[in-house]
Picture 1 (cartoon, rainbow, N blue to C red):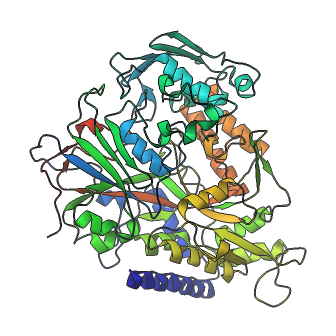
Picture 2 (cartoon, rainbow, N blue to C red):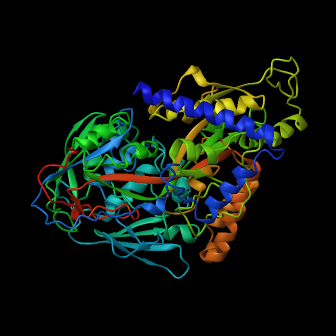
Picture 3 (cartoon, helix red, strand yellow):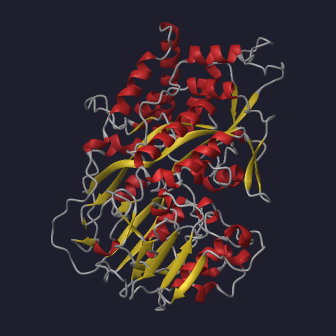
Length: 612
């Protein structure tokens, strides 16, 4: 592995040299980068494969569904790998989880009550059906017969109501309480301890729940209803403040999904068996084992059949295994995620439940933020580090949301001369001759950069960004001189650690395009702590009743994308291709969309295929 790390370091250094040469030889400093970015946008960011010698790939080269047409065996156990260099947190309940790795585990054993269609709108094909009042504010939800918890108890309307009561409770410690909950009639009073009940939630009978919302809008049909029940008979004797750490969440979680948890090795693995009472029918597999696989050893784990498939494969490793990893089929799609650079602009006010900007924050000057965006060449990063399977991003709505992503919006692309000009005009000058710029007030400017550890690219990538910023005279330094482990990174970012000025993160967006859950004033996930009246207005309009008109909603979110390019609380760096290698013995596995049928997955042989 040391040889690979050295190789990636050389790539990083070569990129820096190439960028310096481009800046010296081109007055505009970024014509070629802008051209590449435009091309990517026009093809939904899917890029163009340039030939084997270049090792550049397109997501169009991959299918999203396994093609194995062999005869299935009875049962068998599927081994699923979580690719991470850290342990998973183990908060295994939809109401309390915060990590994407925990969500991957929960997905195997607990279902949404409402299904979604190809446009990500709720349908009546799921475990529950719904009816909507004429004014769009009252939803009557009915749970089907035969939908049971893993302990045999039926899933009831009271369980569904209980999930709202817990998440809205004043003592709730999780991060799910957001605008989709505050839109429920009476939730504000309940959350503030002014009422013992939520007036907008009524249990009609054992299977029927009625929810009254304050405002109608498109988000109610695409994510605005919390679709997960919480088994009241399991949790009702546990104080809300203690639920997230309880054994019912950490050690013995239950759900209503195709598989049920048998045993847990904390942070390492979860063993599940088939839920014979599953409401969609008995699974074809006997069970599933989910286990952590380090990015450094994921190829070996796939080669020897230790895992059949993984949640996501490090795309930077694909060229190395394209021909040698013969026992798997690579599936691919445009990921519903993007990476970004975030700027700390304030803090989270726990009592008020909203972000509070700090006009004196180190990164408060939008010109400084804009210059930092111009200073980096994300198209080159996508090609050199990810072989074209990640590509330059222009807005905070990724191409996964094809109807709303606006590829025409002009965002800063690599132009170091422009970055220097912006900094000069804003008063950031090198006043002491050390090559690094001081603040407009003449004070030393050191920008502390937090980033996560991970695969082979993590260290050289962060060093590329630091060197690119150094090239325009900004003294950016890696926080604590090292990359942070996943959980530690998010603990410090969420806590608004004052040592962090900027950070590199990644978001997986929801099926509903509404970005309020990440960038709203009352969103705990709004880690940059940015707020403005215009942002409030556009986010409100995007989920308003008027936005039931698709064209109007597109227009609103196009305006919002432009606002974020102007205000730059964060800037997107890369959109992503998601690659998933699947062992050749696996049938009926799909990453085509965000709904799936785990009970239909089957195997064509008892043991995984291995590389011979």
